[in-house]
Length: 510
Image (cartoon, rainbow, N blue to C red):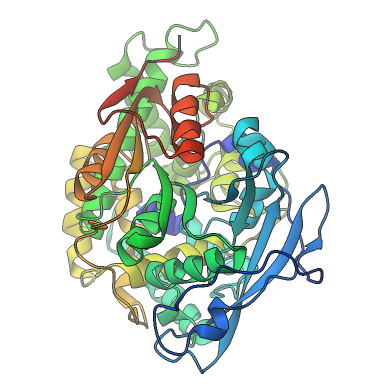
């Protein structure tokens, strides 16, 4: 998510291995096809947006790209317009309609995620649906938020997020203020309008422009929040929504941070339990608690003296970079062997591999950053009501007690929101029940590090038509990560609009 780690590097896509392979794309447009569905716009002044046609053009590897026009401010639809970049992979067989997918974040590029459609969706889904991705407003190619340059982002991520003295606390405070000030300087007009309510309204305009009477959607991590907000705003326009790795909309932002930090601790324990049975495991301790102390000692060591960095880029592998490098592969069980290797090197003083893994988490490529960290912060800060700065020290102390290795890092990551220069122009309803929507499928993984299982339980209960599918597994999100049980249930729901029985549990992968 969503919270602290998200602010310092968003919660990555469901599979880190897939995220590494994602490719960019450009969008352009000519070649109109499929007129939008005839319907009454939900508010005066929006008819031109709901009646627009998407002009698709080829953008490589079988994909087509276009631009969607939406109002910057839905309260002033006759005012400034912005563009939302859209991509699709046409269905390979008997087409039902469009499947819009979102990887999470907030700040994740739906364009890049859709580019990976052949790696993140089953052939069965790709046969029946056009796979459609879009960069939400403020993200990537869709009128992106800008705040800091690459060197400034390096400095921000390097800040000690577990301050030991007054100087480190002050540096963290000044870094958070500088982040907020940079966003105000470069993106002031955009900041009030990048929240999830506006993104959900954009998604309804996109649904109409695609010609679909109802939305078919697969959202992961933060994408579950986007989907739930959409369903609450437009319950009559829901066809089928699969929400994988859910957020609990009832929690405050600092509660979300704390619970997420606890989730990472659970994932770390699961990783260690698996590692101790492998002959290549780098831990000297023969038990989980001892190995956890070794991780704590490593973070303390990097805090005292940075680990070696052999990339030649001049960065120091500080405690914050080390923590991010450990967190990144916890998202996907398939990355655990790489984490074993990285920790073995780090115990010998070399933090290079951990640094490279951290770069994946913050989307730092070739020395430069995408805008995902800035977009993540901008969206989070206007989606929720954050407390004044004085509340963070106590919250971080409590988080550190419950999640000793990651609690402070996650909690302090939201500090720029205490200084944020904009309020959301459209607030999220406190209760997201989506009354009147057809069954909505919520998928929760029992040992999900980033969106703890109880969040999925809570969202399924909150939605008036929520159906919970559980997966006895590890890693962030469940769909297309190795469970044929999960894949069959989700595919059947999205294709036939037939959800599994509420409370169904898919077994652990042997």
